[in-house]
Image (cartoon, rainbow, N blue to C red; front, side, top):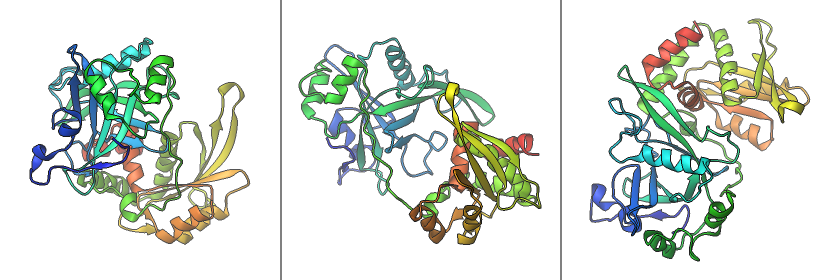
Amino acid sequence: MIVDQTYEGHKEKTGFAGEPINRLMGVGNQGGFRTKKNLNDEIAYVVLVINPFDKSSAHLDWPDNLDPTTGRLTYFGDNRKPGSQLHDTPKGGNRILRDSFNSVANGDREVPPFFVFSKEATTGLNFIFRGIAVPGIDKSSLGEDLVAMWRTKNNLRFQNYRASFSILNACEIDRRWIEALKEGQPISKFAPDSWTKWVNRGVRDVLAAPFAFKIRSKEEQLPNAANEREILEVVYKHFSDDPYKFESFAAYLWTLIEPGAVVHEVTRRSVDGGKDATGTQKIGLSSDAITVDWALEAKCYRPDTQVGVKGISRLISRLLHRQYGVLVTTASIGKQAYTEVREDEHPVALVTGKDIVDVLKDKCEINTVSIAQQWLGDHFP
């Protein structure tokens, strides 16, 4: 199998029967966790299916995410609704996460490999192979790779796992290794070198791809799922009568995105000089850290509008030497403005409507309109 190759579903079958994963991996054709046993009746490998790109799916509250630039996979467990204990799930996915991450934390890396697939955006039958994953990431602290987090749905609380995986540097998977896994031989001459290196020495040789220059389209800058659009609309309406208060919210949001960022000042209404907030960014070890200054511009615009060249140029022109800029908006950035920022390599981070919703969901567990309204009322009255 080849990483990022699309594997087509059966053209004459519909629904789950047409999925290709069953034929590729010999596992079931439903669910996010799909396991295969070996001859010893142990788990030979696990197939993880990332949430569909279609943001109207039932898994909207659990946005699995694969970052190809870092090789990091964030995957949520399978206790996704109230009424069950954390590990009491039909597929047993959370038990697999618990046992695998506990083993790695205790120095035992003989855990099953995780084969990662995602649905192709244009069809429900085709799947893309995204690589093999192993528990944990090198840059995390002990205990942060697998976190049990609370969610609220229909006013009922429950827990689910958020797991961090590393995608190993293995661009091609020899099918003879998959057959060896079924026979209970995870280490064989057909296994990828990166897998053998990780099992034997604990070295995560990650498949990371440097970020390529890209201009996000308007659609990519705004949420496309109904409840996400509603959350963004709640944020806009909460601050629209007094956009000055949005500046404090935008500065706080930046500290969620960059934990090392510290807000020094949210400028007064009439004398911001093109900077709605200023602060510093801590970089390096705490014993010998350095700081860089940043300036933030906040634009509380209707989500269906765009920030143009003039709106961004004002911030860029006021950036000082060795200072970077942040623009936070409930709308999107116009194509010309976005292109000029990136092509001219201005040190400006662009945070748009979709980013706001994603951060609130990930960092503040805001996944419904009612929770958003209550949280905004409590924190930014």
